[in-house]
Length: 476
Image (cartoon, rainbow, N blue to C red; front, side):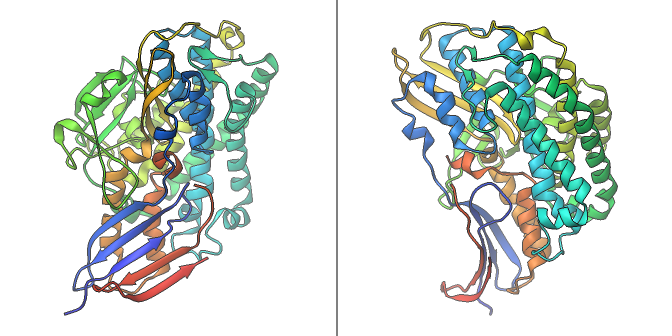
């Protein structure tokens, strides 16, 4: 009888943060199970205790350098709740504009920089060229357009907040500054170019889908629940509305849930093998209540987007599922549609005089001792839950991050891919890349989810039942 073994991929590459994957083999060398381990820890929830409420947007934005805007906005919304204010319409519109810019820049990074090398150069391409530099050499115009598309989103953030990363702009009660007329003109000048880039990328992705039939079926294709924000009419929402849960058959099982009541519907489990929490849908329990968030979930739960091109693309996207679209490989597809939706929404906002208004703050003191802010980060629904004392000092913080809510689904995705490709103890680079690519489809942001800096090589170990290393490969 052969000894059971484990294949360890450490760290997973081309994601934001540090993680590893363990693939457990049975006696015959077939995959018995697989686990996605998040190996970094930062502790924002604890060291924010004792800080003033007004500092929280600026502090929590430092959780991540990729999606600081998401934390900035969710934190400010939690502060709005504690102040018990309705922010001015101009402030709400400006926050929405910044969030749209954040969606564009983050989705562009995910597609063009992290995933396109696999999708366009091939999962079996040599690692030395299967990266953004290899893509730039093979398709320079596409790579350049992707960089500029991300730059467009970052420029919106900078025009509003003064900085591309970690802008100290949104605050409890509103925002600090409006959009300038010069800034508005700059955004308007960008729009024709980025619209063409987004449409070209989506057309390209749809043209290669036939080449990726295997990945569509294998990369995280299974039934689950989906959760996201929707407007009162069921349309796509990214910075307002209420929560909706849908099952894989397309049935809405819970709708118009106020974020303040999230604890009635969402539980949080922990595993010894990861610092990443595993949220679940409470009525179904753990782990049966697995649900997915992010672009795939948002397009599943919404009935329409509300802009012409994105709505046309949404209808085509939904044709890839019987009920909900269940393949995690199609997160890439959903991101490109959301980029188009964001660009169309930005176009519609540009003539709104409120963007230039100085009526931006609702001033108030501490009127409630608890507040929950929710917003759609690029990777999915983000919760900031604060408890304060009468002076506004933070007593308790709970953060539920999109990547954490996808944790159970990412584990199942790794196992599904590994069962298809892994055979015995021999480690093949294309197989490892496919396992990693299954995680990259979710575009996880581990710095957010565990609350790291640095860079590590890829190490893969095969361990015997007694813990001895029987095979080891290192990728620098």
